[in-house]
Image 1 (cartoon, rainbow, N blue to C red):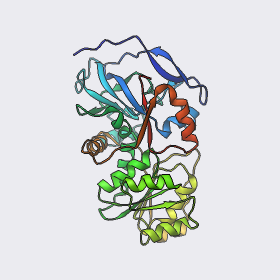
Image 2: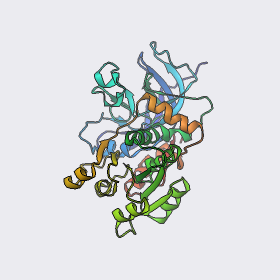
Image 3: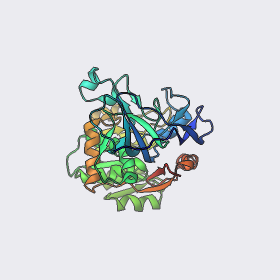
Image 4: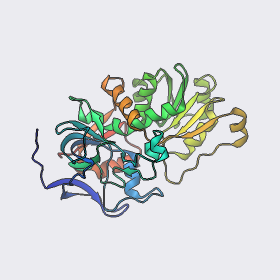
Length: 350
């Protein structure tokens, strides 16, 4: 099987942090010996993409940059060293584009923590273009026949929350709170939690998000815009507090409140990365309650395979809206305003 590969393509590029997002014609990249070239059909839009554009984090981005790290498409070319992909295979482009495979972290399966990690849509041009390169070792191999639009959000949002739930180390039947449950990550976290046998309480704002969260399998919902005692309401709803709390919200206040409402001996997992945020935990209570506070980054290759398998078996599905690649600036506007339910997915052909 062979594909005719053009020399130019459409993509969204920014030259400076916070600068214009330009939808324009750019060259098609050539894969290195260890890389595959993916004809990206769809790409999810993650809050991390917004942070990368704005330059919110103390980690320099590649400039100019093509963002995006939830790309799903078809392998149309590969480097001379690639053994695990064939032309015509379906592949996913993830946040972790590559790692050294030899440091202590890679050796222990903590590949995302590799000091030499290469990040799609951050240090490596990502999936907001029609053709993108990816390290073949880290690229996700997708089963034949996979719906590429629907699987795109699984490649970051799905893997990230699945890893966070594993980090919480909860048992079936225990309560898990999802803070920011109506967003792209949260809506998947609700479903993964339920599929893993957990009792889920979703936390977000507004009646519309509440309906979505309950429809996805949450047993309880607490609306922070109407609750007069959020901590008390969550503890009452879960008969003493959730055993674990997954923070995908980008609210510093919400993160700190999770340290209050989590059950004694419970685990708070930090996932969302609001710029400059601090997790406040009152030391006396944290010690007496013996709570654990853990950070959870993205998953490794095994986590990715497991997260995709939940999707393939029909246990999780991202609520999403498909729009054209050229509409990325508008999607970012909605994201900043907190008006997105589920996930926006970009069709690279438009």
